[in-house]
Image 1 (cartoon, helix red, strand yellow):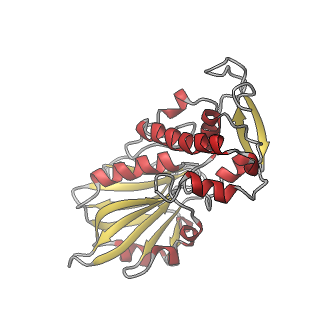
Image 2: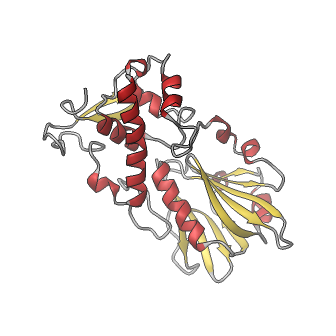
Length: 282
């Protein structure tokens, strides 16, 4: 599933190319790709005629800000890519892919195409004067963004102090920190020297500071690399992310640690994979 760096890379790409483009219509090839409104025709009529003015990200959600022809608010175009979703910026004449689910036609002969092999992703139209989290209810469950001031060492200490769950599981909880997922939780734990199974309430102050710093470091590095592509993720131009080639532990089961050459191990935690170095992480 695309995580914060991948979604942020897509957001930045969209924010560069779409502002000022008017939505002139579209085609929904898979009805269940539209989460709201219930009727596909209402979704298309709601966004048609609006201009995309900016893009925002909250956790793994994207929000395209819409402006009506009279300059008033047009609501939002919401997107969650889930496991295999892609938003591609294309010429409308580009052949339609097998897994294309939604086509949005924009001014100046451009197209924003939503492609999703596993079909778990969703799009929303949030009408004007409606809070996005009343429609996209998953937004209500999100904790602070990693780069916000609220996500501090003190915040982590307070949230983890009474939790016995493994720290890897805690980091995947979107109510603790928004946008962090399997890849970057593994990477942050490696950089902070913590094993995935370490009970959250057993992490001392110094190691907690290292963990906080490591989370910000791996996310920053991956954003600078355009995210990670192990299977389906692409940016808006269809280009792979480059972080995977320098990952410390994620998806490197059995390969030598980049620091000590000990083989990386993989274990299952709550149905998810966790990768770690048994020498560097204690």
